[in-house]
Image 1 (tube, rainbow over the protein chains, first blue to last red):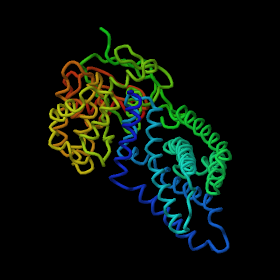
Image 2 (image 1 turned 135 degrees about the horizontal axis):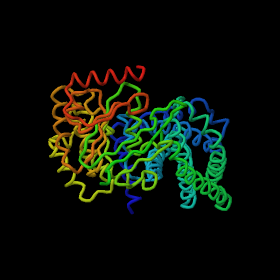
Image 3 (image 1 turned 135 degrees about the vertical axis):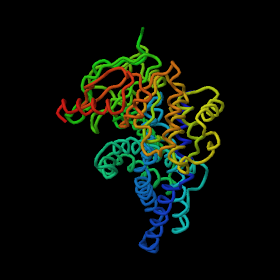
Image 4 (image 1 turned 120 degrees about the vertical axis):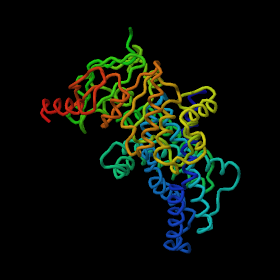
Length: 228
Length: 238
């Protein structure tokens, strides 16, 4: 219980600071709308069926917006060297990692909802029918976001003590994103095409395995990334 | 008598440069050690090692004979650290900051403890103001409150007076002086001889990662210590 209360304390603190500054949410939200507007004017919907390209566009927007916001996960800890205070406290560093993953997942999930709304408005995108379609879509989004955030939380920590700073993040993260992109886009495509759940199940299983691997790797390696 | 804080031949290098080079000392309960030294002497690195924030390459540090590597979490709960950086979140109020740290240290009755600590340090009326809106003096007293919240056995102070005006500096010094209650061991790193000597039971001069002078503070006069400091550094080739 104590472990979970530390995880929640870290996440709550991060969300409280973000709610008061709206620093990352504003940038991520504005960028999401901008992407929607750009695609709205660049794609001729009389030639291309939006339903078929929407999944890739949604996940591309999510990844770019995510990299913009999540690259700055530790900015608030850098101010006044708050990170030293965290490292000096008697908490387990993986609790700190999971707290960061939780707060940033909530943040990115709220942005994904905004991206879906933007695409629904600009492209008149029709969402999957039936509760199973919605559950599948929610599952893919949740697992996709969790896997992306878990790896970004670790790599942003690497950037904290690196002379290259945030610019090193895309170099490190892009190769690791390949399996996430393959399974999230494939699953989302099939969900929008109203294909049976059996065709999506495999992607969901793979995404769950990726989340598990990234979370375990993140929690184990976090100490080496964050300590001076 | 078992020393409260013990450092045994600790060393730490960064990119081939020895920031801390074979430092050893014992401090008893209630003692205050002031460490002086030029910039780049490795004083902050030494404090970070004592705080358990970074690990020494060689040697070991212990509080009441608990070695940092063996019982890291117990160790951290016995240490409080204050630097010229507040380690607080500007966007949270003083109370919210302390509540967050109380959760990390798993303290019982955090609200009462926070009220009591803030009252002792004279910052209770500022409890609900955002840290970013407080003056530097109040921020630093809040930093001290954060460091004392879990009632640590050892308090590490790294340039706590930096950026403070004369009055705020005096107030903080009084607060630190009141901490010398016989139960707490304090290590103070400062460039100010006046502030360091006023509070110290023992003094050390650190240069190039080593303690080049250690001794009891037997009523050193300011000018006398200045001569000692300059001569010692000259002998070390500065």
